[in-house]
Image (cartoon, rainbow, N blue to C red):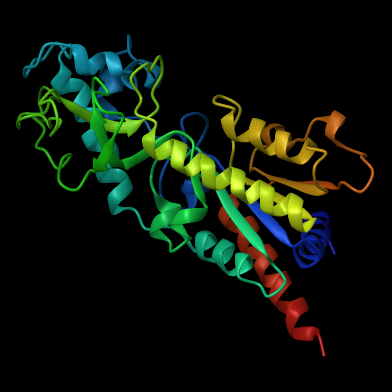
Length: 309
C-alpha cells in the first residue's frame, strides 16, 4: 500500500466515524468539470486579457466597469467590454457539467450515520446546486453567476440571471453589442451578484440567508455533539477565503473536528504545523486533484462498506 492509499484509507475511517461533514471548496474543485483556476497550470484566461497586458483578472473582475460609459470600442475602455467578460464566464459555467465528485459528496452526506452536511464554496459556477446538492446546505461566499443585482444595490435584492447574460459580443472589439441588462426596480444597469474586487455595492440578501443556514449547521453540531469532518477541495492561496474558513472550523473548540486538505499542488496541500498534533483532532494532506481524490476515497469507502457482514 503506497502513501496515497494509506492516507485514503485513514480518510475513509474518518468518514465512517464522523456524524457531520463540511465540504469547503475553491476553484480547484471545478477543474474536473473542465473549468480553470485563477492561477497556476490550470488557469483559465479570457483571451482579450492577453491582448491587454495592462489588465489582469483582478482588474476585469471589478465593479468599476459597470460605471464606465457604454459603447462598442476597440480601446477596451467601456462598460460593454467589462460585461463581455461576464458573458464569457456565464457561457463557460453554464455549459460545463458538474463532475462525478459532486455526486460522490452528496452520497457521503446521505450515509445513514451522517446527521448534518454542508458545502462552503468560493466558486461562482453554481455546480454544487446543479449537481443536486441540497440548496439549503450551501454557502456561496463569493456569490453566483446564476443571480443578478442592481449596480447601485438599490434594494439589496437579487433575481435569477435567466437570459440576462445571453448577449452577443463583437469578435473584433470584444464588447457586448446587445442592450445591457438593467435593474427591474430602478432601471439602472444590472450586474452579476458576485463579490468582486473593491466591491462596495454587493447585494447581500441571498448571502445573508445562506449565512443563517450555515450558522444553524454549526448549532446543530454543537447541540448533538457530532464529530465534524472537514474536507477541503482545491482551495488555493491567492484568494484564501476557503482555506481560512476550513482552518477556523477545524480550530473551533465547540466541537471535535478532523481536517483533510486536498490539492494537486504540494505547497497548497500543506496544513500549517500549528494545526497538527492536536489531541483528538486529526489532519491529513492529499496531493492530488479534487476529482481524483474523491474517486479514490469513494472506491475505498465502497469496498469497506461492502466488506462489512
